[in-house]
Length: 278
Image (cartoon, rainbow, N blue to C red; front, side, top):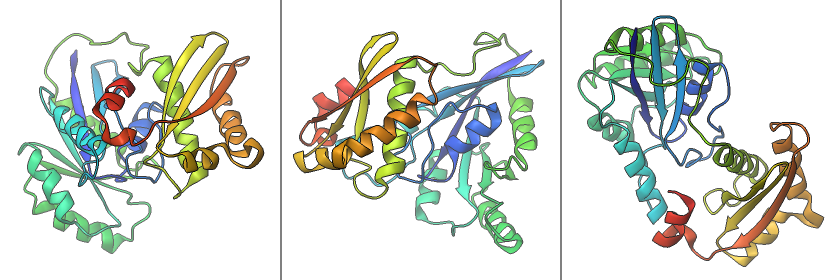
C-alpha cells in the first residue's frame, strides 16, 4: 500500500477545484470562474486498492490587494510543506505569463506540470503551451481536461507511482475532511458567485452560525450597506434563488435560513478574517 499527499497549485481559475472533483468523481470543492473562489485548503481523498492519495486544493496565487488576499496566498504556499507530490496547473488557453512563472518558482524541481483545459484549446495551442511549460524545467508534463476527464487517469497514475509505502491516512470510504458546516457555507458562497456574477464576488463571505438539524442558519457577510440590498435582491429574489440551489445539494428536509449582515471592510480586518477561519 502507498499513501501520501499531493498539492494542486496554480494561479486563479486554472481549474484546480474542477480537476479535484473530476479525480474523485464527486464534488468536494466549489467551482466558479471568479478569482478567490477557493479560500481554504480543501482535502480530497482518492482511495485505490494499492494507494491512497490525499489531494490538497489551494487558493489561486495572485497579487494580493487586501489582508484576505495575503492570507489566501499564505494558505496556498503552506500547502507545499511536507507533501509528497506538487502539481503545478497552467491554463492551455492562456499564454504562460509572469504569474505562472512566479508560482512555478515556488514548486520543487520534481513537480508535475498539468496543462489543463485542453478541451477548450486548439491542438496548436496545446502543443505551444506544452513547449512553453517545458521551459519551467520540471519533472513531467500532462495535458488534461479537468472538465471532460481526458488525460486525468494518466496524471493520477503518475502521482500514485511517486508515493511512499505507507498505511491509509483516512478511512477507505471518506473522500473529504471538510466539515458539514463549512461545506454548506461554501455552497452558499458558490451560488452567490454564480448569481451575482461580477457585482461583488470578493466582498461576500458566508458562515454557518447555527446548526440544529434540520434547522441550518447561514450568515452572509458583505462590506457595505449598499451591498446588502444586492445580495438580498428585489423582494428577496437573490436569496431565494441561492436557498433553492443550496437545498438541492443537501439532504431532504433541511430548513435553510439565510441572513445578510454588514461587516465593514472585513477583508482588511484581521479579527474578521480570524473569525471566518481564513
